[in-house]
Length: 370
Image 1 (cartoon, rainbow, N blue to C red):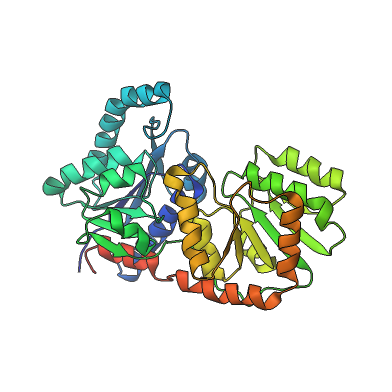
Image 2 (tube, helix red, strand yellow):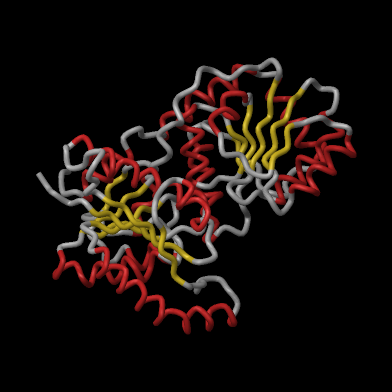
């Protein structure tokens, strides 16, 4: 049996990237506890996260109980010239700090979960692999690989893909389709409750102004329809959204950010959200019917590609941003409410996109046990 004990998780930027890393970290610790490598008094297995100074990981990683080191790093793909030049100037120092972190921590395995911060760490880990025996990997959560993962995929030992469609950009020998690892506390739910018919609206970890605006425009047409709304508006757009509900005289639960997604999924009759990989996997795991409104500016249009994959199998509805007016959206929602059998069918079909053993397969592979 392998005695690999130290895992370094690199990357972040979005809630989806970070929470996938947290799920892998939790499973890493669980497997080592089960193997008897750790005990309450002496924890030999360890996990370290490395992310960007300005990323959500600064808040989310410590909140989930793991230590975090940060790099000062920007972006290179689809950004203005000033940002690109600044990032190029920052790269040497980022690589140096990443090297110092790797030498000090001496990980047995390094996995990149997406985001620019994963680049220097995973690349250097692969270069050090012959000397220190480091297993390197990335996880691609979308159907279309991002810029950093396309680059790193050429060098790492393993590429874990959430969707079969994501495998096309990598060498067949490296790829394993694992599904997307998510927080283990989310469990399959019974069929949704239709009375009261509850719309759960959220835009991912940072909110979504486009979704918020569409829902606000629909409120006059949803009012007095017996529809309840739970709305995660995002920190930046919260005040505008709350004022919009107040003007419409529409009572609703409006939050800046929701930590307990499980209870909201349990109350939801229908979910309206972006098509980020983490949200999609959560919906598949609990069995809730979504209306996806993909982020139109997502890199390589990956959110719409993700959403269409579900739509093709009748596991979701897809509404491109800007396609419907508020009135049309309200009619769309009330039309679905009047056809509960259709919602039930989607709740059933979406569950085929969830793999409960995703984190387990990834960790076993990183430990050399699979």
